[in-house]
Image (cartoon, rainbow, N blue to C red; front, side, top):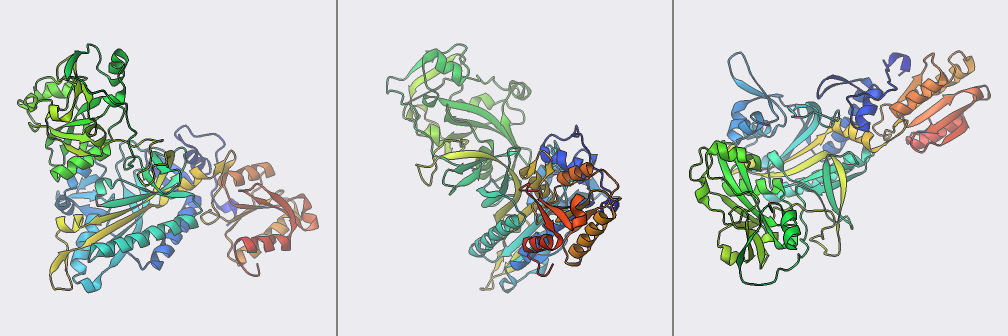
Length: 596
């Protein structure tokens, strides 16, 4: 390819709409063009990157016996209603674009394809003898992001690889899950990325277990907690750790203390010389299910710890056996709308009476009570007395005498000790999610009644797994991880071109002929080369080459009359003056090509 035919359009100034460096560089390098918020055109340079990533993905999944398909992007609402996800995905803060056809039939633009593939497999696979099966596709997905940002990182239209496996039993699912984890590791290594695999919450997809593959980058939206020996890693929304022992509160006669203007943990401690770990903090939430039922929730946690809303939502969902589409703290405005007795915020105890909810208009009239392990382990503590300006002191759980679900709903923090080894501490870093794998179990096969006949002749539900890679996001994540002040530094395996050849002075015949000779030899040997044949200053060409991040640069310049060119490595920034044969030999070793 010649630059004069590439439609290359680079920018020197940083675009105002781009907040992070990878977004800025993709726009400045002419890789993407913004159409509107969260919607981008993939220009020729980026499309070459995406194709190379796609080929790596296809190659590794084919090795694992996966079959490639292409599923409809328009999906009927009925199958989503059967799985119980239509309302949560299309209403409120749901991410699915929905529409109606001319007959009034509701459809959704696919953000994911669990329902579709489950229905298709249930109509196609009938016997355990046909299992296991693993099907993947690479296509455009659509998500109505509340706040599209960061270019391809969080866009409303993006390219994704999604795979779905079907099994006769749990052990077979786990085996394929392990194989897919290995395939993902190979894919990301081949793409030249530094990544970590961490435990993750399954979110709206659901299932028993899931792991995320993260490119480590300071701009990452996810906070990762990784043990110092690297044997444990998890997204903070999933991470677990050992709670440090708090300061013991002496055993004494239980009593009530006056605590005017002491609503916060900090105020309570400062006024009374308490330590936060001696306090049971009680928070009131409202959980909204996908059937629009609203459940008040009372959460108890040690005063020096924070509630993990994801863990809390999962526990409530498990208890109610329903999907939770939203969970948030109760406000005074909520209380006024419900017409219930005011809640004494700042002074709530775990035994706050259900009688407060007796006049609730749309809420359930009984609290779901949940205690974090950190609070349940306290032998003596301080907590609210459920009356304005009053707290209880030297109380214990037998005196509180209320039934609670006890579980882990706390937010693990950097510096916490690890469960697998108490000598190890959790360290934090930020990550960009590029892949996610799930063990779905029978969640979708049961709701969609997808069955097969097992070896005993008995009808059973499929065990399922699903596996996603954000192909377009991966491309930008590579830029976020590998760049410098001059521009992008593409990993060689996914770079739009492997080599760029620059003619320093297009009017110099010797330079032009030498560059053309090198270009033809590289193309003949299937090296993806780009020839900058523009009538531009050499400095402009060098800046563009650095900006678009081609791994190797060959310059036919002043030494062309002696048969010498400059060979520059974009990553190491080293430059060598070599003759043509030496350049070809070095590149043949780099690209593992014989007789270049």
